[in-house]
Amino acid sequence: MNYCVFALLISVSSAAEIWNLQQLDDAKKAKDKNIILRDIQVPAGKALELQGLPNGTSITFAGRITFGYKEWKGPLVIIKGHNFHVEGKPGHVIDGEGHRWWDGLGGNGGKIKPCMIYVQLTHSKVKNIKVKNSPAHCWAINACRHVIFEGIVVDDTDGHAKGGHNTDGFDIARSHHVKIKNSWVNNQDDCLALNSGTFITFENNTCEGGHGIAVAVGGYSENVAKHVNIRNCKVIKNNIGIRVKTLLNGKGIVKDINFDNVELKDISQTGIVIIGNYLNSGPRGEPTGDLPIQDLTINNVRGNVLRNGTNIQVWVKNGSNWKWNSQVVGGTKKLPCQGVPKGVNIQCG
Ligand SMILES: *[C@@H]1O[C@H](CO)[C@@H](O)[C@H](O)[C@H]1NC(C)=O
Ligand SMILES: *[C@@H]1O[C@H](CO)[C@@H](O)[C@H](O)[C@H]1NC(C)=O
Ligand SMILES: *[C@@H]1O[C@H](CO)[C@@H](O)[C@H](O)[C@H]1NC(C)=O
Ligand SMILES: *[C@@H]1O[C@H](CO)[C@@H](O)[C@H](O)[C@H]1NC(C)=O
Image (cartoon, rainbow, N blue to C red; front, side, top):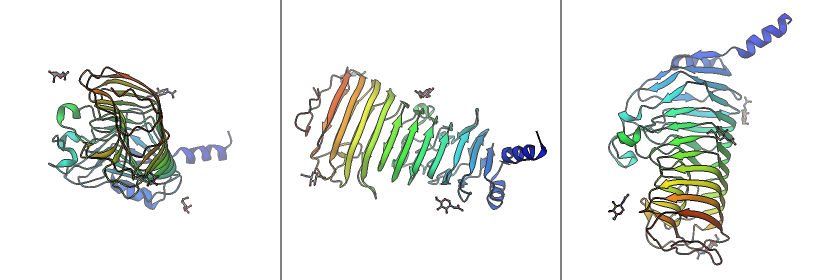
């Protein structure tokens, strides 16, 4: 190989190794486009700020990333930019060591708990990242466009015994063209909570231990969720399987939501929930119809609910154009379905 090609290969593959926040600042000043974050111990009350980096930056996590303890809102990590490639090396972990904050109360009181990772990216890819024991919500995906999350692991398994609560896997708001695939979540709240956005795909993911896959709209600055595809997923040992919940007295719209080929296993409370009167963790009062659920397809959603649970619960107003094909069995607690659009046949019990 001639020398020029060799030099080019060296310069392409050279990356700044970063071991602390000072070196990260230096890399930002130097406009490094290829950084490796290795074994960083982020000081208490500070965020690992992956912003102010050039378009096209490649970020690699390596080793164990940890954070000092402080009661604050976080986030512990901020990733903001354009055309980023964010990836984890095999064996790396971003460890929130959430047990230091967990007190069983989550966001409802007790210690102030930092959320884990705030993401605001455009035209980017986030791949093979492992996050462990987030103190509170894990991935806050906000104002993203054209971003793929692939091979993400959220392992808050320890939270079941140690008081983890409100440890959502993925929260999505104000985002468009976002795909999350081939990922695994074990936590103590929603696996996915989609609050607003369009063209959102959640595909080939496994959710364990938490509160299921949710389209949850209403009461935010944006209250529109459209063109959502949730397919080829598994929901195992959650209290809820899948749900669409819109806020009681909310305004907005939920439209073109498709659940296809979702397998439920050992759901403790309710297999499928579609409600228009969500408030304080349950249905409350009469839905009003100003936040209607339109063009909803439930196809091949199947599996079992534990004996004391409910297979399907529907309580909406003003829904339209639903298609429904589910086989959810095992629950013996019957709840009536209310407001099901005409012509839709649901085995509610
Ligand atoms: C970075 O990307 C953004 C979004 O496309 C663009 O507006 C901006 O001009 C780019 N910056 C540079 C320095 O190219
Ligand atoms: C689904 O995701 C798993 C990882 O959780 C992966 O091993 C598998 O290849 C994926 N399947 C497809 C069809 O992409
Ligand atoms: C039902 O939804 C439509 C479409 O968003 C809206 O125009 C209408 O006002 C709603 N009706 C009721 C009774 O809420
Ligand atoms: C189911 O409900 C019955 C009656 O309330 C109760 O005795 C039983 O312990 C429950 N079983 C489970 C597995 O929760």
